[in-house]
Image 1 (cartoon, rainbow, N blue to C red):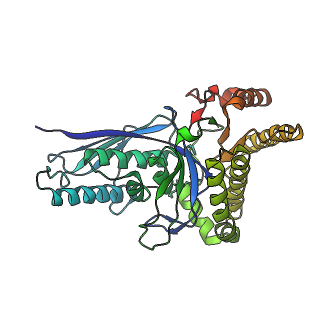
Image 2: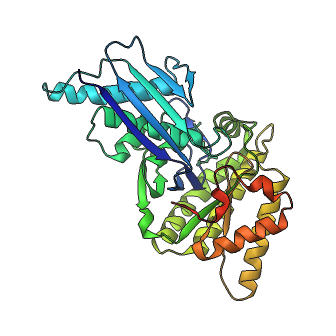
Image 3: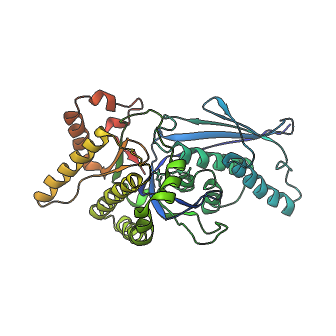
Amino acid sequence: MTVYQATASAPVNIACIKYWGKRDTKLILPTNSSLSVTLDQDHLRSTTTSRADPSFQKDRLWLNGEEEEIKDGGRLATCIKEMKALRRELEDKDSSLPKISGYPVHICSRNNFPTAAGLASSASGFAALVASLAALYQLPTDASRLSLIARQGSGSACRSLFGGFVAWQMGEKPDGSDSYAVQVAPREHWPDIHALICVVSDDKKGTSSTSGMQRTVETSTLLQHRIKHVVPERMRAISEAILARDFDTFARITMQDSNQFHAVALDTDPPIFYMNDVSRAIIALIVEYNRVAVANGGKLKAAYTYDAGPNAVIYAPKENIKEIVELIVKYFPQADSFKDPFGLFSGKGVTG
Ligand code: DP6
């Protein structure tokens, strides 16, 4: 008997230009384009196995060993349904293909890092889910096409289908067919950039991205300014900086955009605070580190960015990573709490 099963894995991505706000909550269409770096270290991945079998009663999914409900019309159900539809199209065209699109699937997914710690587990999770179903169904579709489906699982997931530097183009069409991810540059284009993750806290975060950003759309006037007058120019400028391997510009824009995202969260009613005192102290340290470099005639040496949680991600050229780790360990007496369980804080660098 043939076994229809496939495994795929996808990494976390960390945005430099943040996605924050949906214009369509069902299709997950964003209010602005975004851009991220996909981390390619083994520590931060979701790995997913999917199996189709006619003896299964229904679609089921386990995340880190615990079964998750697949709610009708929910994000998981939508992604599975869309992937089955792509398989069905293939089967309709080629009658020699086994008709597995009608079989229920069992899906098993694991993250090798804390779920919901502000480390974008939904991004790698839905990207791995879509990639494993694409492998199971042997779909000849490209990553941008698959990103249209991963996007409906979690917006940021569409960017994790590519490595390197990735843009999610917001698109304009109401059906979302032009809202997908594209690769701006592969990792090899700029291997010198590394990412350091400082796990300030691995508690589950207070306000989820999904509900937080919806509240922002409903109440923040600053968001309207951001999406109309700030992000389009930043997307253009940061893409250009990446292509030119211009770290100074890349760093400046990354920090500005992190700041504005957190300002927009604060401008929400009621306000949302994702960073804590330790997060802000790390910002102060990086600002001072850069100030000294510039005062000595140099350029920016590091860039911080924070997602919907207190953990810092610091992008820097490889040559600065050791110095940055030493600085953080020196200025944070509680540095032990920074030693995350995965050894990410080794300065080895997460590559994008
Ligand atoms: C701050 O992709 O988790 O990390 O689409 O509702 O699932 P949903 O939201 P999600 O939001 C990510 C927000 C962010 C910024 C980013 O990754 O661009």
